[in-house]
Length: 210
Image (cartoon, rainbow, N blue to C red; front, side, top):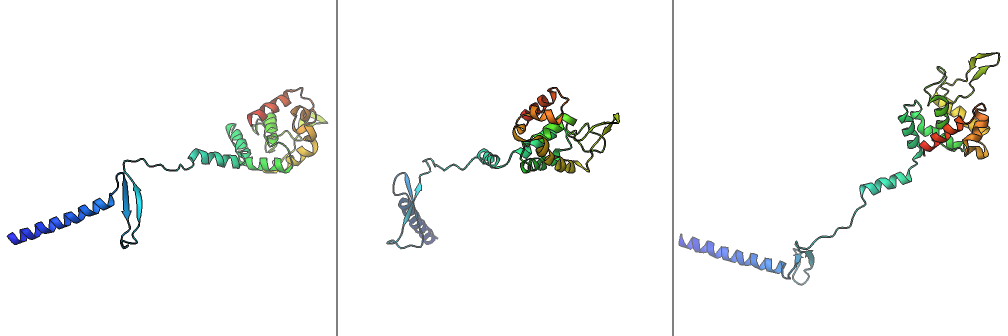
Protein backbone atom coordinates (compact mmCIF):
# COMPACT_ATOMS: atom_id res chain seq x y z
CA UNK A 1 0.00 0.00 0.00
CA UNK A 2 2.84 2.38 0.98
CA UNK A 3 4.74 1.55 -2.22
CA UNK A 4 1.69 2.39 -4.31
CA UNK A 5 1.31 5.72 -2.52
CA UNK A 6 4.96 6.62 -3.10
CA UNK A 7 4.64 5.64 -6.76
CA UNK A 8 1.60 7.92 -7.29
CA UNK A 9 3.32 10.79 -5.45
CA UNK A 10 6.40 10.51 -7.64
CA UNK A 11 4.25 10.43 -10.79
CA UNK A 12 2.37 13.55 -9.64
CA UNK A 13 5.60 15.46 -8.99
CA UNK A 14 7.02 14.53 -12.40
CA UNK A 15 3.90 15.53 -14.35
CA UNK A 16 3.59 18.79 -12.39
CA UNK A 17 7.17 19.73 -13.23
CA UNK A 18 6.64 18.99 -16.92
CA UNK A 19 3.46 21.09 -16.98
CA UNK A 20 5.22 23.96 -15.19
CA UNK A 21 8.08 23.84 -17.67
CA UNK A 22 5.71 24.09 -20.65
CA UNK A 23 3.92 27.09 -19.15
CA UNK A 24 7.15 28.99 -18.59
CA UNK A 25 8.29 28.32 -22.18
CA UNK A 26 4.98 29.46 -23.65
CA UNK A 27 4.89 32.64 -21.62
CA UNK A 28 8.59 33.42 -21.51
CA UNK A 29 8.28 37.16 -22.25
CA UNK A 30 6.11 39.46 -20.19
CA UNK A 31 3.01 40.72 -22.02
CA UNK A 32 3.64 38.35 -24.96
CA UNK A 33 2.59 34.78 -25.69
CA UNK A 34 4.38 32.39 -28.05
CA UNK A 35 2.53 29.64 -29.90
CA UNK A 36 4.78 26.67 -30.71
CA UNK A 37 4.16 24.54 -33.72
CA UNK A 38 3.94 20.89 -32.67
CA UNK A 39 5.86 18.28 -34.62
CA UNK A 40 8.87 20.52 -35.38
CA UNK A 41 12.37 19.92 -34.05
CA UNK A 42 14.02 22.32 -31.63
CA UNK A 43 16.27 23.69 -34.41
CA UNK A 44 13.46 24.30 -36.91
CA UNK A 45 10.71 25.18 -34.47
CA UNK A 46 9.09 28.57 -35.16
CA UNK A 47 6.89 30.68 -32.99
CA UNK A 48 3.99 33.02 -33.68
CA UNK A 49 3.35 35.93 -31.38
CA UNK A 50 -0.07 35.92 -29.72
CA UNK A 51 -1.32 39.26 -28.29
CA UNK A 52 -1.79 39.43 -24.57
CA UNK A 53 -5.42 39.05 -23.44
CA UNK A 54 -5.04 42.35 -21.60
CA UNK A 55 -4.18 44.27 -24.77
CA UNK A 56 -7.03 45.60 -26.96
CA UNK A 57 -7.65 44.07 -30.39
CA UNK A 58 -8.05 46.40 -33.39
CA UNK A 59 -10.18 45.12 -36.27
CA UNK A 60 -10.52 46.74 -39.70
CA UNK A 61 -14.08 47.99 -40.20
CA UNK A 62 -16.36 46.45 -42.83
CA UNK A 63 -18.75 48.72 -44.82
CA UNK A 64 -21.89 49.45 -42.85
CA UNK A 65 -25.29 48.22 -44.04
CA UNK A 66 -26.37 51.84 -44.67
CA UNK A 67 -23.36 52.46 -46.89
CA UNK A 68 -24.19 49.34 -48.94
CA UNK A 69 -27.82 50.52 -49.38
CA UNK A 70 -26.70 54.00 -50.44
CA UNK A 71 -24.39 52.51 -53.06
CA UNK A 72 -27.24 50.40 -54.45
CA UNK A 73 -29.60 53.40 -54.65
CA UNK A 74 -26.99 55.54 -56.40
CA UNK A 75 -26.32 52.93 -59.08
CA UNK A 76 -30.01 52.15 -59.68
CA UNK A 77 -32.51 54.20 -61.71
CA UNK A 78 -34.85 55.72 -59.11
CA UNK A 79 -37.40 57.06 -61.62
CA UNK A 80 -39.66 53.98 -61.85
CA UNK A 81 -39.86 53.84 -58.06
CA UNK A 82 -40.65 57.57 -57.84
CA UNK A 83 -43.48 57.08 -60.33
CA UNK A 84 -44.71 53.92 -58.61
CA UNK A 85 -44.86 55.56 -55.19
CA UNK A 86 -46.65 58.60 -56.61
CA UNK A 87 -49.28 56.47 -58.36
CA UNK A 88 -49.66 54.24 -55.30
CA UNK A 89 -50.26 57.28 -53.10
CA UNK A 90 -53.28 58.26 -55.22
CA UNK A 91 -54.51 54.71 -55.82
CA UNK A 92 -54.06 54.96 -59.58
CA UNK A 93 -54.58 51.91 -61.84
CA UNK A 94 -51.44 53.06 -63.68
CA UNK A 95 -49.18 51.89 -60.84
CA UNK A 96 -48.30 48.53 -62.48
CA UNK A 97 -47.04 50.46 -65.52
CA UNK A 98 -44.37 52.54 -63.74
CA UNK A 99 -41.48 50.87 -65.56
CA UNK A 100 -43.24 51.15 -68.92
CA UNK A 101 -43.90 54.86 -68.37
CA UNK A 102 -40.20 55.54 -67.81
CA UNK A 103 -39.18 53.27 -70.70
CA UNK A 104 -41.51 55.03 -73.16
CA UNK A 105 -40.34 58.43 -71.94
CA UNK A 106 -36.74 57.47 -72.65
CA UNK A 107 -37.63 55.93 -76.00
CA UNK A 108 -39.41 59.06 -77.22
CA UNK A 109 -37.08 61.44 -75.40
CA UNK A 110 -39.30 63.44 -73.07
CA UNK A 111 -39.40 63.96 -69.33
CA UNK A 112 -40.59 60.81 -67.53
CA UNK A 113 -43.10 62.85 -65.50
CA UNK A 114 -45.20 64.05 -68.45
CA UNK A 115 -47.42 60.99 -68.86
CA UNK A 116 -48.25 60.93 -65.16
CA UNK A 117 -48.67 64.70 -64.73
CA UNK A 118 -51.10 65.01 -67.66
CA UNK A 119 -53.06 61.98 -66.45
CA UNK A 120 -53.31 63.65 -63.05
CA UNK A 121 -54.52 66.91 -64.56
CA UNK A 122 -56.96 65.40 -67.05
CA UNK A 123 -58.50 62.50 -65.10
CA UNK A 124 -57.17 62.47 -61.54
CA UNK A 125 -54.90 59.59 -62.58
CA UNK A 126 -57.58 57.62 -64.45
CA UNK A 127 -60.31 57.94 -61.83
CA UNK A 128 -62.53 60.13 -64.02
CA UNK A 129 -62.53 58.79 -67.56
CA UNK A 130 -65.21 57.75 -70.09
CA UNK A 131 -66.30 54.22 -69.32
CA UNK A 132 -64.17 51.48 -70.88
CA UNK A 133 -61.99 54.03 -72.65
CA UNK A 134 -58.72 53.64 -70.68
CA UNK A 135 -58.14 57.23 -71.79
CA UNK A 136 -56.60 59.04 -68.81
CA UNK A 137 -55.08 61.88 -70.85
CA UNK A 138 -58.14 63.50 -72.43
CA UNK A 139 -56.66 62.34 -75.71
CA UNK A 140 -59.05 62.80 -78.63
CA UNK A 141 -62.02 63.60 -76.38
CA UNK A 142 -64.09 66.50 -77.72
CA UNK A 143 -67.73 67.43 -78.39
CA UNK A 144 -69.31 66.10 -81.55
CA UNK A 145 -69.44 69.05 -83.99
CA UNK A 146 -72.99 68.23 -85.06
CA UNK A 147 -74.16 67.68 -81.49
CA UNK A 148 -72.01 69.40 -78.80
CA UNK A 149 -73.78 67.50 -76.05
CA UNK A 150 -72.26 64.24 -77.31
CA UNK A 151 -68.57 63.58 -76.64
CA UNK A 152 -66.35 62.02 -79.23
CA UNK A 153 -64.08 59.61 -77.30
CA UNK A 154 -60.87 57.90 -78.40
CA UNK A 155 -60.81 54.49 -76.77
CA UNK A 156 -57.98 52.03 -76.09
CA UNK A 157 -57.89 48.31 -75.38
CA UNK A 158 -56.22 48.76 -71.97
CA UNK A 159 -53.85 51.11 -70.13
CA UNK A 160 -50.75 49.64 -71.74
CA UNK A 161 -52.25 50.10 -75.19
CA UNK A 162 -53.08 53.70 -74.31
CA UNK A 163 -49.55 54.44 -73.09
CA UNK A 164 -47.88 52.88 -76.12
CA UNK A 165 -50.10 54.75 -78.59
CA UNK A 166 -50.08 58.12 -76.88
CA UNK A 167 -46.36 58.38 -76.01
CA UNK A 168 -45.08 58.76 -79.61
CA UNK A 169 -47.78 61.37 -80.30
CA UNK A 170 -46.56 63.47 -77.38
CA UNK A 171 -43.20 63.85 -79.06
CA UNK A 172 -44.63 64.39 -82.54
CA UNK A 173 -47.27 66.98 -81.66
CA UNK A 174 -46.67 68.58 -78.28
CA UNK A 175 -43.29 67.89 -76.72
CA UNK A 176 -40.99 69.51 -79.25
CA UNK A 177 -38.10 71.87 -78.63
CA UNK A 178 -38.50 73.98 -75.52
CA UNK A 179 -41.98 72.54 -74.98
CA UNK A 180 -40.42 69.69 -73.04
CA UNK A 181 -39.41 72.19 -70.35
CA UNK A 182 -42.41 74.53 -70.24
CA UNK A 183 -45.90 73.16 -69.45
CA UNK A 184 -47.47 76.50 -70.45
CA UNK A 185 -46.06 76.12 -73.98
CA UNK A 186 -47.55 72.65 -74.21
CA UNK A 187 -50.88 73.96 -72.90
CA UNK A 188 -51.22 76.27 -75.91
CA UNK A 189 -51.58 73.26 -78.23
CA UNK A 190 -52.75 70.51 -75.85
CA UNK A 191 -55.68 72.40 -74.35
CA UNK A 192 -56.01 75.88 -75.85
CA UNK A 193 -59.15 76.83 -73.88
CA UNK A 194 -57.23 76.74 -70.59
CA UNK A 195 -56.27 80.14 -69.20
CA UNK A 196 -53.31 78.91 -67.16
CA UNK A 197 -54.74 76.47 -64.65
CA UNK A 198 -53.65 73.50 -66.76
CA UNK A 199 -49.96 74.41 -66.87
CA UNK A 200 -50.04 75.44 -63.20
CA UNK A 201 -51.35 71.99 -62.30
CA UNK A 202 -48.78 70.22 -64.47
CA UNK A 203 -45.94 72.23 -62.94
CA UNK A 204 -47.16 71.35 -59.44
CA UNK A 205 -47.33 67.64 -60.25
CA UNK A 206 -43.83 67.79 -61.74
CA UNK A 207 -42.52 69.20 -58.46
CA UNK A 208 -44.18 66.39 -56.49
CA UNK A 209 -42.31 63.79 -58.55
CA UNK A 210 -38.81 65.23 -58.24
